[in-house]
Structure formats: structure tokens, C-alpha cells
Length: 397
Image (cartoon, rainbow, N blue to C red):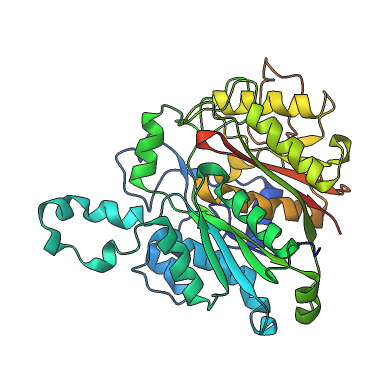
């Protein structure tokens, strides 16, 4: 059975337009959370977001695609280009695939013409709505980069990208594919901002994950992908592995549509089964990239689950959403890139803005940047609406 090795990454978030820029922001403690400028919303002055400060035209110019594409697809194309271009010509003849997640689809374009559409269908150009659904985002990006051996879209809320990476790793391990670009993308939209505001889980200040006085999450946007290869593909492409996808699991506690179970049943199942898949013990984990959204329910549920799995001996752990905001369908991909960087660079990223210990858990997140660390195994958590919980484990080679 061939392992799925991470050989390269591609990313764009509010803290950087590529992997190097994002890493620099993480090392320097630069958050991307602030006032919306590209997204035109009633809540611009009240609800901070983590926005990529490039217009759709500027995003399109970076990859040569049409500025008429939905913003989610534009973000996706930039990250895919970074991950794929160095190996595209070397991969001729190999079975190459694209596993991409999103939850927003082309909503940013659809909502701009919605009022006109319901009053006068003929007034709306087809190009404005043709890429509305989630699968269309994946298809147009795959076509642009000439990827066609296997293309699929996963949309399981906040665990979407993690499930994309899990499925890609499974298919490489089974010998069905040689190369996979896996992760996801999501853009900000008025639809999602209003929806989360209606749920009353948005913070009107920059979020404070795992702080006792946390108030909610900040939405973000971006895209993150890992380039996975089998040993055969690595040999043909002359690629070196950053790390390996050694463990993964998906579970569902079926507790509530938008809340995790109070004691983190699904979270525990995902983490425990990922450890079993990797053949690791809890003590083997060097660092946990927490889901850590900053909501009362999520952080309590995840915190209790971590405490149970690690039996009170919790390794270094932090949420990076205080940097990037919660990028929804992109979160698992973005944080997979950060997990790979943690192993490659020997760093643990700080849990920004932490001030007060949570009362219902007995362990504390890392609040300062740690460098020069020996990071052997990183556990990355992505827990979504509907109880869809996924954990990935990345291991040094």
C-alpha cells in the first residue's frame, strides 16, 4: 500500500497570498482580521472578517482566468497554481486528481443579481449564475489546470477540506491514483455573514479561541491545498516529501444541526480513530492544530474531547483561526498547510489573544510562538455543522 506524501502546498488567506507569506505572518503574529473592504455588507463597521484584500479582477490576474468566475473559484485557482505548477510538466502520464471542498459555491455572484433575477429573469446574464453550485467551482478550476483523471467536490460544512484530504489519501493508498491536489476554498459572502450572524455566534471583536471570555467566531476566506503523491509519483517527479498523511477519520455525533455535543462525542471518535489509523498513541502527537473557532460551544466541546483522548497529558495545541478567521469549507485545507509547515519548520503557532483560562477544561493552549521544536506528528481537527467531525494526522518522514 502506497502512502500519501505531502510534497508541496498552495494557500491564500487574509494573512498572505502564498505559503511563504502566510508562514511569515504566523511567525510575526500578524492577524488578518479586520474591517471588510471587498465584501459590501450592512455589517462592515460591526462585524470584523478575515478578508483577502484583492478584488476579483486582481485575483483573476494572478492565474489568467476570467474575472467573471465566482470569488471562491478565483481563490481556489491561486492556491492550486502554487501547489501544482512546479510539478505539472513532470507528472505527464500519472493519474492526477483534484479533491476540492467548498460550502459557498458561487453565492457571491448569485446574491448580486438575486433581486433582478426574481423580477426579470431575462435581465440576468447566464455567466452570473451558471457557476452557483459547489461542484461548478471545482470543475472550472480543474478544467483550467487540465486535471481530469478524477475530480470531485466535498461539502460537509467546516470539515469539508479535511474530508477531501482524507479521501485523496485513501485513493492513493489503494493504488487508484498517483497524485492528488486536495483541500478546499471558500469566499466571504453576504449570505454566509448574515447566516452566521443570525445564529448569534459571530464576534464583534477579533476572536479569542479557547479563552474563557470568548464571544464567537470571525468569518474568513481563502483556499488551502496539499499536493499528495505516491512513492511512484515522487520518483518520477523528483519530489521530496514534507510529511505523510498517516492518519485520518470522520465521525458524526448526530447531536445537533449547528452545535457539537457538549462532551465532544464526535470529536473524540474522530481523533481516536485517526490515531488508530496512524498506529499512534496519544503521547506520540507533538502538536494539535485545534478547530478552535472561538464559540462557546465549539471550544468547550473540543477542549473536553482533547482532554479525554489525551487523558490530561495534552501536547502543545493552538487554534490558528485567530489569524485567518474561520474559512469554513477551506479551513481543513488551510490548516493542513499550517500543519505541514509546523513539521517542516519545527514551529508551533501561537493561539492569539488568549487571556483567561477556560473554566471547564484543565489544560491550556500555547500562547507564544515556539521555534526549534521537534515536530513528529501533528493532529489537525476540523469539526463541522451537522456533527461532521474529521481529524487528520500528518507525520514527519
